[in-house]
Image 1: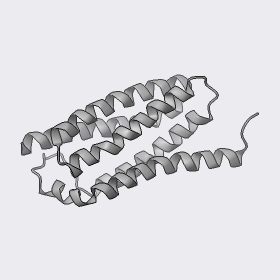
Image 2 (image 1 turned 90 degrees about the vertical axis):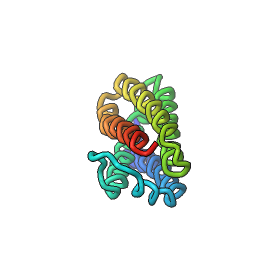
Image 3 (image 1 turned 30 degrees about the horizontal axis):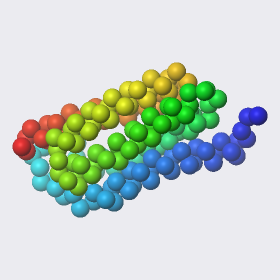
Length: 159
């Protein structure tokens, strides 16, 4: 039996709320470390600080919609795909704590490289089940790859 529109809406709202909550919790935990970022030597391509919360909010919404699509799919592999998605959320949550909270820029860079790899696997799994869900994750891949480059550059300029 196919889920009702009301049921689907509830799933999408929850699916969007989960990554927004994860991101918000990470932001709360690391808010004192944000001033540290402003004090670092920055590469010329570093965006201003106000860009990050806007970009991440959009990415979290896209993640939620995408994960909702996978959850609602009837594919036998959806559980595995959602586990990789959960791993991606965990890695996503941990990075700002390493970078801003503990100011461990090299370790944070390695963490981001792992995150990029997990995102690639997640996109591949999502694509096999629901290509549109995979496409919604491409901005995340691009942003995190850029963040890894930025993180590495910050480490080089401040070591």
